[in-house]
Amino acid sequence: MKAWIFAGTLLAAPLLTQAVEAPAAQPGTVERDQQEVLTWLDLQRSGRAASPYPQSATAAERDRAYQRYLKSYTREIPEYLLDDNNDFSTGKN
Image 1: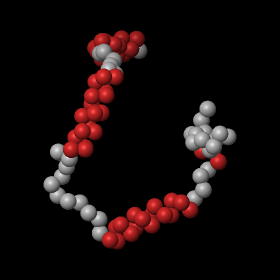
Image 2: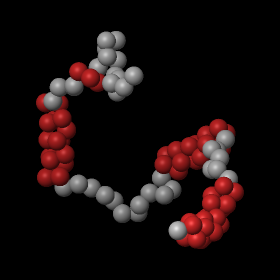
Image 3: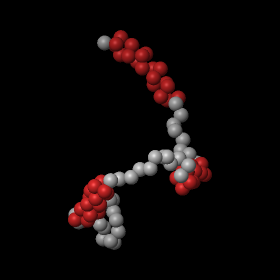
Image 4: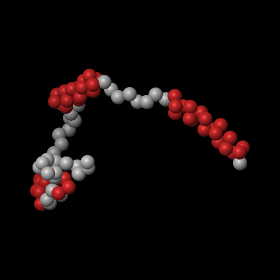
């Protein structure tokens, strides 16, 4: 039994050392993150990456989407989503 434990430890040792030596992912800097956001917003605003094929919905698809939208107003907001200050809350403290 001890031999099996020893063999298992020897087999797992390289994996454990690799996990310990791997550096943790570092979050980006605020400036870099801000620049990425600005780049994506500029790309979206300019339309440079837009599809050359126009996309449209049929009248029936638009009608069904609008009916789903209207139906969403038939349900009341659950009490646990509203706090005492009339503010939106997740219900978690």
